[in-house]
Length: 294
Image (cartoon, rainbow, N blue to C red; front, side, top):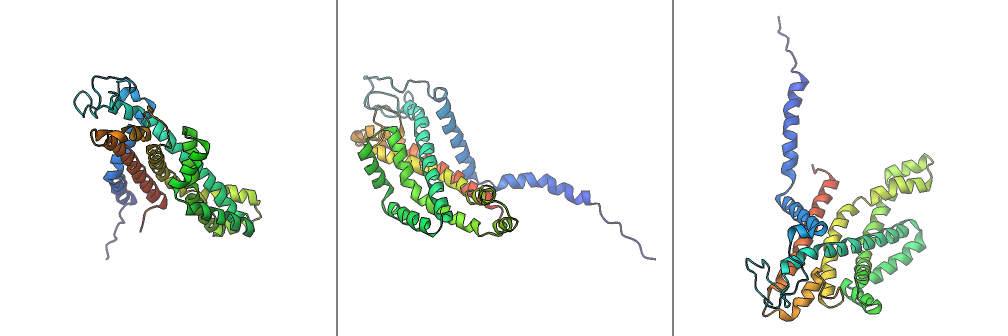
């Protein structure tokens, strides 16, 4: 007589898997992403409530301590007017991030319009918009923005528009390629075969799937826009001092580079750290949207 084997219950095999799934997900997040997320929270807090992180008025002038090096009293030193540099950097975070967000929104918005029009507007629209994008793409972003600011004058609005227009051509190429790829996909062809309206296909299938990768690009563009805006301000084409915006701090500290290094190095570190934070978070969002690799 043969003994019958009782199959093991399914619940026994599924229980441990459910217990170990959450730690595995947490282990997938790189340590650099945790650091970037923590720094991003610090930047967000500095933008919303800078007085919680820096209690000293960033515009208070103290002629007794001009160009004081970093110390326990002034963590990051003082500028030529004796103003606390740490407070000025913290209070300038919101203005710098707003410039980056606004410029990226303008650039990505123009890219969506031009890229979608080129991909869906037919041969002539693709040719005209494609040549226009190539001409704009041939100019360096910094040069194109400087020309725009020289024509319309330096201001916060002009700086945002200049950076947004400068970064738009590169993103427009990406949008055009994504829209063309989704346009010829199987589910779009199936929706056409079912007789769906072209506007409904565009709104429900083409644009959501084509613009999905732009979520990561939007994060990367914020750091890029902050770098470009700070560079323009450093050259005198941005927000004028005594604004605590990071680019304005770089411009104000330029004459004192040999005797007060902290006026150039520390605001530059803030710009680079913010750009690296945006890059790390953008890369992580991009890999998350792509899904797990097998």
